[in-house]
Image 1 (cartoon, one colour):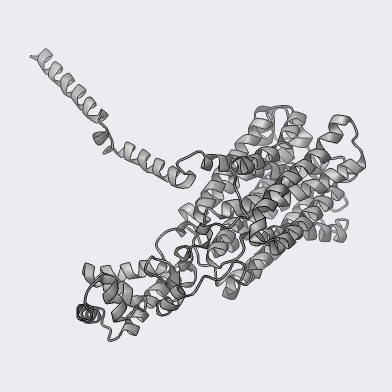
Image 2 (image 1 turned 60 degrees about the vertical axis):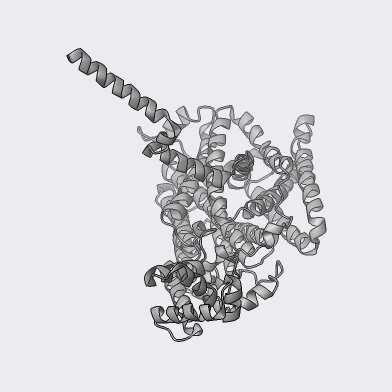
Length: 583
C-alpha cells in the first residue's frame, strides 16, 4: 500500500509539472508574470528591435569618453600641453565657443538643410579629431602645437557630441530618456572597468577611440537630433499638463491651456519651434553648477596625492584587485569612474522611486549632491593647510571626487530630460535648447576655474574654499527653489509621468468615479468640460440635442452645479488640487 501511495503521489507531481509547463498555466505563475512585466517594460523603453540597445551602447561610449576628456582630473596629465591649467582653459574655452557656433548654425540653418549639415558636421569633427590626435602620434610629430590643436579639437568634439546625443535622446521623451541614460551610464562604467584592465597607456588609447564608436552608432542607424519629423509636431501636452495645470484641447486627447479655451486651441496651429521664451532660470542654474565643477578641477590641480597608509584602505584594495595595471598617481583620477554609476543610481531613485518633479530634482537633490562632494573634500586634513600646493590623504579626496562626478552626470541627465520636456511642450527648438544648456554648463566651468585661479590659494586653505562653495551652492539652491517665478512653467512636472494621462483626463476620471457617472454621462461630461456647446456634443455622440440636454441636467444635478461654466470650474479646481500636491 505504501508503494502504491508513493506511486500515486509521484504521478500527481509529474502531472502537475506537465500542467505548469503549459504556456497558459505558466503565465499565471507569480514569477513568470513578473518576468513578463519586466519584458514589457524593457520593450517599452528599449523598443522591440535592436535600435534601443544600440542607443544605450552609443550613449554609453559618449559618457565614458566625456568623462575621460572633460571630467577625469588626469586628462591634462595625459596631454602634452605645457601646463595643467592651460589644458582646462583651452578645452573649456573651445567647447564653449563651439556651443556658441552650434547656436548660430541652428538659428540660421533652415529645416531643409539641417539633416545634410548634421551628417557632414559629424564626419568633419571625427576627421579633425583623428588628424589632430592620432596622426601626430603615429608619425612621431608630437609637439606643443599639435598638443594644443588636439586639446582644441577635443573641446569641439565634446560640444558637438553633447548636443547631438542630447537632441537624439530628447526625441525619446523625458521618461524614456531618463531610463535609457541610466542604462547608458551603467554601460559606460562597465566599459571603463574593462578598458582599465589593460595597461594604462592601452586604456587611454582605447578610450580615445570611443567617439568613433559612439558617432558610428548615430551614422549607422541614421539617427538625427536636428531633423524635425511629424511626430515632433504632434501636440504632446499629455506630457506637459502636469506642470502648469494645462487642460484638454481636442477630442483626440491633445490639451490646451484650459477647458474653456479648448475650441480656440484646436482651431489654431501650434506655435512654431523656437517661439517660446528661453528658460533663462535653467541656464542660470547650470552656470552656477558649472562654476562649482570648475573650482573642483582647480582644486585637484593644486593637490599632491599621497599613497594611502591605512592598513584597511579600500583604495589600496581596489588598486591591487580591480585596477592592477593603473599606477597610484593615475589611480585617483580613474576612481572618478565610480561617480558615473553613482549618478545612475541617484537618477533612478530620484525619478523612479521618489518620483520627484524637476524642481526637486535640480534644486533639492542636484545642488546638495555637489555640496556633499565639497563637504567630503573639506574633511581631508591636507586641505586645511595654506600654500600653493597641499597634500591629500586619498580616501576623503577620492570620495569627494566620486560624488562630484556623480553630481556632474546627474546634472547632465536631468537637464537633458528637462530640455526634452520643454522642446515637446513649449515649442522650443530642440537643438538650441541643448546647445544653450551645454554652453551654460561649460561657460560656468571655465568661469569658476578662471576666477578661482585668479584669487589664488596662497592665503587660503582648500578647506576654506570648499566651505565657501558649500555656502554658495546651498544659498543659490535656497533662493531658486523659493522663487516660484523661476521654475513655474516646468518645476512641478514629474519626468516619469510623461506619456501618462493628462491632468485634464485624470481630473475627469476622478470626478466620474466620485459621482458615479454613467457611460453616456461620461461622454457628455468630457465634451462639456472641454467647452463644447450642445450642438457639437449631439453631433459628436450621434444623438439629439434633447438627449444631450437630458444628460446635462442629470450631470448638473449630480455635480451640484447650475451651468456649463461651473462644470468647467469644477474640473479646473480638481486640476489645481493635483498640481498643488505635485508641487
